[in-house]
Length: 158
Image (cartoon, rainbow, N blue to C red; front, side, top):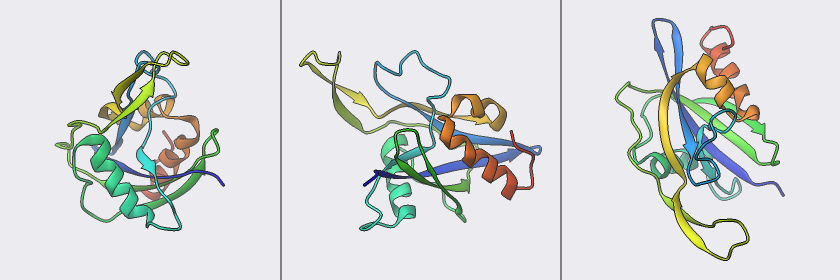
């Protein structure tokens, strides 16, 4: 059975230009990577036991240190990532004051197969960026969420 994640994509319109709030994964593997590794703020959940929107709000707070923005959430549906994980995302308008505070941490073995563990943040930063700048930085499968959001807002794809 595939793993499931639920996420939240805060957005704003600045003079008709779409900007989104994305997260960069923490840890040494991702430290020098930029293209194709940013993500909607998301986390795993069990769709048989938890509502996707509630999971998205919980994960947003855990991974950014900020509460999930209030407002009407737009269901952007699901995508299947290359890892076979199914990601369900919601979008919500958010103020420019939304910022990354701190992420929860996880323990990983680093370097791989070394037997040593280290504690890393799940997310090392999150920031606002235009949809045009976000597209090449996002995980490939998640780029569909930008298109769906732009279509809902009556904007051309980024």
